[in-house]
Image (cartoon, rainbow, N blue to C red; front, side):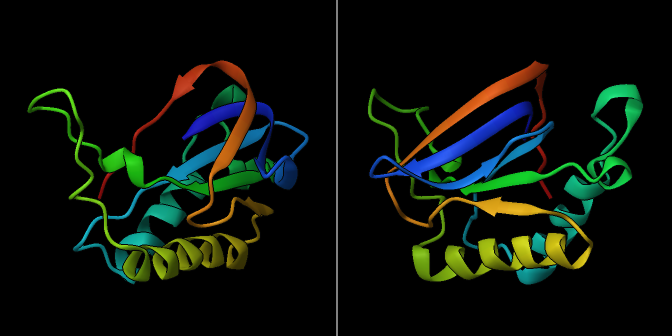
Length: 137
């Protein structure tokens, strides 16, 4: 998760999701044993995490979120020079969990922009300070 001033995600040169005011870019990686309960818990954590200016959360200020699926978060390069993504869940598992994550945020009142699951995406962002947070269950 990165605190940003603005951000967008493009597929084939076309903007598919964007936020144009301070908010968060959330990269979501799913592993084999993740569940809807895990996704929901992490969504609630993201929405309430006090990492914006003046120790405010996205829920406090109505900050938008740009959510991008990112299987490469589970890349493992401990052996050799070629990473493996064996810990990343297959699309049939990961895509519905990413959608559930977004749905929980939206149900909580969040404005959620999204990338396109499985697409070759280009994410552009203007960071709002050196703030990046890794959340795990």
